[in-house]
Length: 380
Ligand SMILES: *Cc1c(COP(=O)(O)O)cnc(C)c1O
Image (cartoon, rainbow, N blue to C red; front, side, top):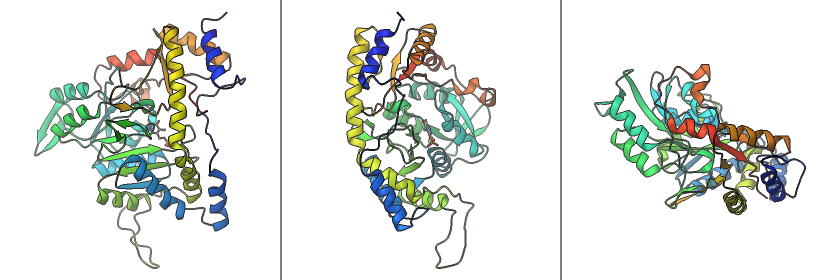
């Protein structure tokens, strides 16, 4: 008898007692084939096509924003969103160390440096209190721009990440950012369909970013989106991600150094079919979350649920173990028995590649790093 045999049995039972239960698998039960075949029949499989336009309209509706731009992947979307928020080479960007590597890479691709600030225990995302404490100590306003007193560099943006689809404390974070005149860019890659005070995640920042990678709730195979309420910024985002070509009947004129970050129509077709099912996917996950919650509670294990005034999409569901040893045992036993589980990310600054950046004490991030595991969360 292993320590977690009941947990393993319960999880397997939720997924038809299959021999192997993955962490999160995609589900294609709608118009996926129809739309993808349609792009092939039309020959429009590449960088222009009706599904790209349709995807952008759907994303504006889902994220409650005025403008959405289809992008090749979430990482590239973050890179361009930061540039459009005003991040330049030599600047700094406040973010969390408890995140997927793409959050931090997107900052570095712009020639900027991350400042790692702690997360909250309850949201597992960037802590407004810790951001405020950092700015009280190191922030300095000069001509309406916030500088880091320690490095003398401009703090050009603040990028929280909504961990596993649980919204960060946005009202408090926006209050701090507004006070210091720092634009907010939401890494909402994991949080499509989540809400904060009844408003969609992604619509709170100057720009927001989603991912449609294969492991997310809805997938385009690979893809991303930039969303914003600032129509002018949205137009710029489209321009920059499509080689910054000036419209002309036949000449090739480019007015900026842009990127080829377009989402192909083939991928947009898959995304459209998937987005049609987002509400039912989230409903299915919320039902699973309720079942996990009552089961884990009965076993004395903390299952992470959404906070008041928020709606979580329950992308990857989380159990919180008592300490690192328990976490190791849980991971070992579940994975050895066909139930795929994973630890939360290693804090980014622990890798030598990223160890040289400024950070605060990271007390909550370290606490969560030792205890949080993801359990199978697929749509059923
Ligand atoms: C998935 C993800 C991204 C973007 O990933 P892509 O694979 O490039 O689409 C960015 N940030 C976070 C936190 C993610 O989970």
